[in-house]
Length: 354
Image 1 (tube, rainbow, N blue to C red):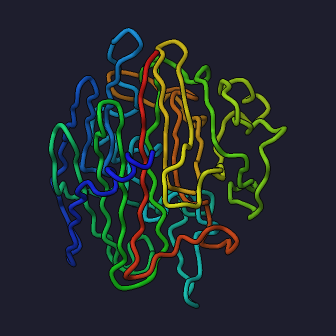
Image 2 (image 1 turned 30 degrees about the vertical axis):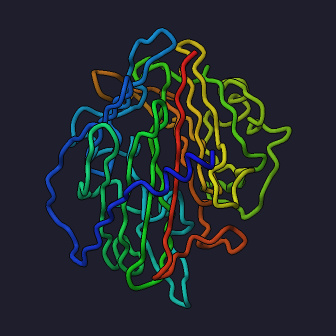
Image 3 (image 1 turned 180 degrees about the vertical axis):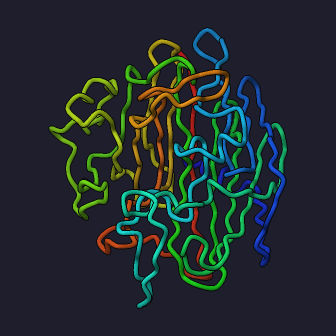
């Protein structure tokens, strides 16, 4: 994996560092295409809209959930395909203290802040900085002082790129301009490897390379403890179907895993997902410490693209990230990034079909 990591890190990111807060950008769609992989994106939320992949017979299908219209993305509460920030996942009681100052944030999730607040990075227009159709696209965003209550200015970029014939990379970079600030970006695509309109993902086979979780309270805020998955429905250390243990839970998976391979500068294997019908398989590698594993249990007759209706468990989100509420839990890995430091978040997907 080190060779892929080396190539991945040194591909051009082409960051845009502008002082101005950017308004009224035109919303547009873009395409990446290589071989029989095809990807459609929009600069609204730096969002993945379509992802076309072949199955074991060579038949093509779109394997991510999404919408037909930009207005649907603007009114969306599911974060389909979006880039999440400034801080993904939950911040307890919608506040945190940094350098002696308490910052109050929008409470948009049962008294907590979820996925950056009322209007996070998923709900703004990014700048398309550079685009090569058979290779990569880079979006940039300048987050202004006190945006959704967060301190300081932050320059952000995300690059989506093809690596070789069957790999797809995501590179997220953030640089604080003038103040220390928490940063925890995430990519929030929902996958259904049988096809976005093919029903639920309960028969998908999943293996997660995380032997602990960060258990949560009744408001889904971590307690600060780490709990072994052994003997619990969260144990996916060996491959098994999503549905095999889901009835032991309140009807869905929505949990942060502590990744066993994290803590070094290299990419580590995070998760493998396979659909036994189409034969499509997704293997995800990352440099992050956590994985939010969410099986779409709160989807409820959501009207998607191509006339599809997404019911419960229509897709699975695999969000590599820092731990939820780390800003309030000092025993969790810190998400504070200071001026002069660089936040770097890498993901590499490998797709096969057999």
